[in-house]
Image (tube, rainbow, N blue to C red; front, top):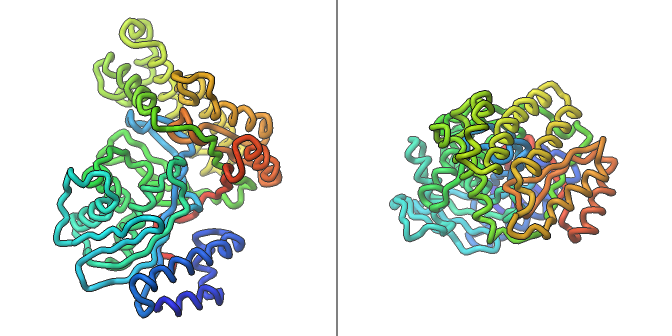
Length: 426
């Protein structure tokens, strides 16, 4: 369809079922329509209303269990969420990709030059270039297109707005030129490749995989080259709960050392036992070695190692609960995960500023409200930023008000687990 035809069709409810397959509820579908129409109009104004267009989507993600385990080849459970990046796209004959994202400059990539350049590290254009290069290396067709994108995945929220963007570009190329035949795992790996090699940012595969695959997904990083990826079939919409992400504020800019210390201390334990990462050492061997390890590493490193081993076990248990439809058991594991992050991994506040504990406060208030009914834990890297809570729907208004009374209006985001990853919507 051409731009105006598609706008009219969306407003006439022609594509409601397409939208519902992605956004789940009728209310969410109605909320999405103005956003889709706005992006279509922006595309028309930039590239022409007479163009044939389609619309793609890629979601943000939430880490559900497996806090600070992936960097030591551990296990994680993550899920796609209903916040997403969307793209209105149309083929062109120029061998050039043009992507205009709302609020950002136009990214322009000449497909005749797909070589990484260190001088351009940090430029968002390189993400587009890297995804195109990675897909081409896999042997798929890559040609030019024009696109307008917009995203409601909040930057800095731990919901992985950059991964959603990378997966969106890969999804566009898959559907526009390869009949949607590029495997979702390959798209995730290409997205990681783009961020590592072209953008210059070292990152794992978790964010991209959760965005690309969709719904709940568990990943075992025992082999970082060939991680074991499994989609977990659980219909979150029938759980009677909402997923809340609470932004407590706080500045991440001076926390680099804190994040690095979590990984560094876990690896210090492994190296003291002659290995590179904890996953190469059995739990029993580690526990037996604690007496001699005390003279080689600090006490916090040992606590963080205990967290690592038990968190891997919790991921397996959480997956089992979801697969068996045991949401109550799942919630108890989430609470355990959060407590371990607080007491053993110690990433809920920074020791640099021990009197500022917004995450601790959010978790404490969450426990007061949700104890015996919901679940709560630190979200993402920790030290500042966001917590995660699974809230019974009949308590949602109470919980949301309490969080926003403390942390500010609009700081409690009510989400759902999205049933699909990167996809063509229309």
